[in-house]
Image (cartoon, rainbow, N blue to C red; front, side, top):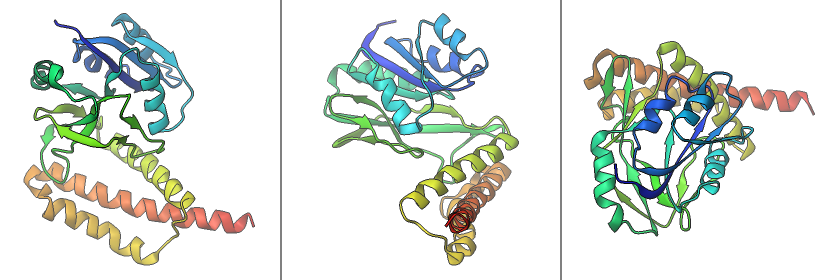
Length: 254
C-alpha cells in the first residue's frame, strides 16, 4: 500500500473493541498517533502492536484532546478519526487518488454513515452527517470546545465516500451516552450564560422528535428510526433539566 505524508490521529479511552478496526482502515498513513486517557483495557497495547505512537494524556475535553494529538503529529496533513470509526474502502481509495491535488488551505468534509440497532441509519439527520476530518494543520485546527468540537478553517471541500461509524454498542450504551453528553452540553451552555427555560423544557423535546422523525424522515429507518428520534428528544429534555439543576445548585451555594 502506498504511504502518504499524512498522520492519523485518534483519541481513546477503553476502545479495545474498536481500535484495531479504526487503525487498520488507514493503511496509507505514514504515522499513527493515539492519545489515550486512562484506559484500563488493552487499547494502548493493541494500538502499539499496529505501529501507533501512543501518548498518555489526562482528559482535556474533546476539542483540546484532539488538537493535542494533532500537535504531536509529524506531518502537516492530518486525518482525525474517532476510535469507533473507520474509513470505508471506497473512501480510502478516494483519498489516495485525490491526495496529490488537495489544497493545504482547505479542510475536507467526509460523510459519515452510522450503524445502530442492527442496521446502517440513513435518515433522521444521521446521514450524510459530514465531518471535517482531513486537513493541513498549518491552516486548520480543532477548537477548544469540550463537546461538539469542530475544525476551524477558512475553506472547506467534500469527499463523496463515507466514514463508517459504529456509534453505540446497544440501547443501554445510547442511554448512558445521552446522559453524559446532555450533562456536558448543559454545563457548556450554563458557563456561557444560558439559563433555564420552562418553555424550552416543554417544547424543545417534542420539537426535536418531530424534526428527526418526520422532517428528516427518520420513519424510513423503521423501528430503529423511531427509537433514535425518541432518544434525541429525551437528550434535549435532559439538557434543559440539567440546566435547571445547575441553576439550583448555584443558588444554594450563594
